[in-house]
Length: 238
Image 1 (spheres, rainbow, N blue to C red):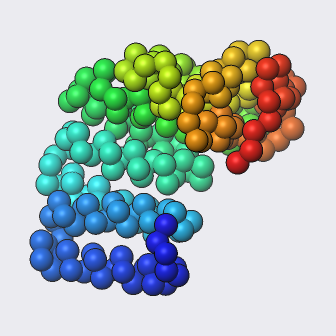
Image 2: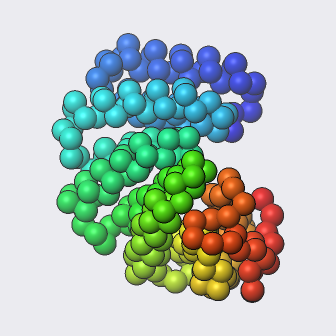
């Protein structure tokens, strides 16, 4: 995070963008890069609207310059989806599906980016299921959480193959799958995946294993809400 105050950071970001636009032009890769960096800083400040605006501008520049299926677009699409994941998961899902299709076509299914995109896709699909459940659409929510589980399972499989079983990316994928399994009332399977995440060394292992998306109602689709303290799963802190 920027060491100064929020207003100072905003001024620095806007000056950096103005200089880049003046030197390189509004449709340059440099402008898209600065906009992407601005979005990262805005998101760290909790300013999602500004982060989204910056990323949408970056996406438009790169689409116009590189075409609709260039691998660099997948990064911007994934970043944009992360901004929208909890507030507009349906739109986030669309961006991630596009990013995954581009990455598969241009870089191959074994590329490291695919595992990360699949993990984010599972989170977006999980968030969709939670919104459906909150609106009383239990049957659709149940179907959607199974879609999320499938994405997380594939993300975990690829993460293990690409990075090895003890990599932090595997911990993130295992935690995402564990969270989705909890929502589907499968606490035993969830505990195994959360334990896998906790067993991988790293300074943020416990944070990775904490469920990231919670059901807003008392019960997940298809049954009673399982306890967060599933067998073998100890409570973790932020």
